[in-house]
Length: 470
Ligand code: FCB
Image 1 (cartoon, rainbow, N blue to C red):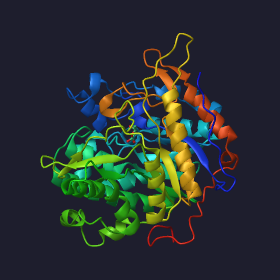
Image 2 (image 1 turned 120 degrees about the horizontal axis):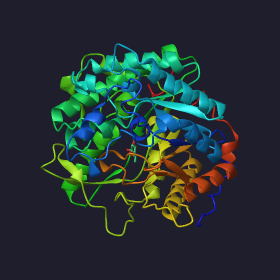
Image 3 (image 1 turned 180 degrees about the vertical axis):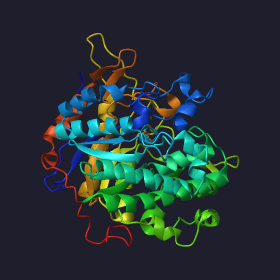
Image 4 (image 1 turned 30 degrees about the vertical axis):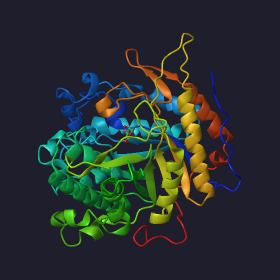
């Protein structure tokens, strides 16, 4: 088994640090029709012919709903101090609002208690894309009222778990689920309409602000953030039209959510388009003080001009010679370092890397083990890039691998394997991969691991206006 040594960590690195793993409800829980869970837009989308590779669905997934004790046991073995998961909104509110499903709430009680018992801090994300179908039937994120439905759901979660959970993220990757779900295609609810995209974006921003207020009011000592997928948008060529396309794509992908949430403005290039959906006072409703910036990063994006795309920009080719993962995503760790520094300078908040990892073509070998040297190389290069960013001044306070388990990778179904634990889907057997052991050694060797993360991120000395809790 090839296991590279962990990167060295400088003594001058910051000491508070959370080492973790991440998952999401629809991708691992299964039990889609059990104990009163209502349908989500992903249940509906998966049933539509041709949407998901191989006709896969999240109906069973990793059966985490029943096997969570084993999964928490794996995390304990791994040595992580934090676990990020999401609550399935339709599991606790089957119709999205109104009647509560006690059995669904009790599942997360059991999970949270098991984590705390294992010495692992729960990081709860309210929304990882599984909108209740009943709300989508009313317009979902294209309806301004959805922000209030979300705030009511946030209040339920805050009151139920706020005695034990302090780390809350409002959304996972708002730019990704709005762009692909409402305009570009490829994700639930499968709408392709630029005007509806703009509405959905603004309403998700309003929902974020409303939920932050609700969480702050209901959870003593809450530590609040949101998780953004941030990738440098680079032009696929030097042609001026590609350079302009990259700038436009960047506004939608990287700016549309963090800028209004943390700087109280939409990025130029998007502000005029969003204006018709705004009401007086909206930016103040959206820009509520939060405690940290959650970053998901996998690669840069190469954008090109594309007249047929409603954004006028689309995905270009990755330059020849750049290595790629089995998803076709470019492997460029320096872009990760630059992204961390860029976020640090622009938003002046503590940063938690809440997703980073890669899909590799993993197989069980004849001895029953799973060797994944390409994942280890990837993680080694990316954690080294993170340490460079920390040494250059970025206030990075945690790193979470995507993902603990192989799982349902949205439109790609169960083909791509992102886990550091292999899941043999027919038997649901879990096999820690070589990268699991590599990560355990990294955590053990790290000076950053020895200090428990502080529930109250102190933040930098000079915060940007609106970017910090007052
Ligand atoms: C991110 C998603 C996560 C997973 C990884 C590979 O964009 O947040 O659910 O699919 O990509």
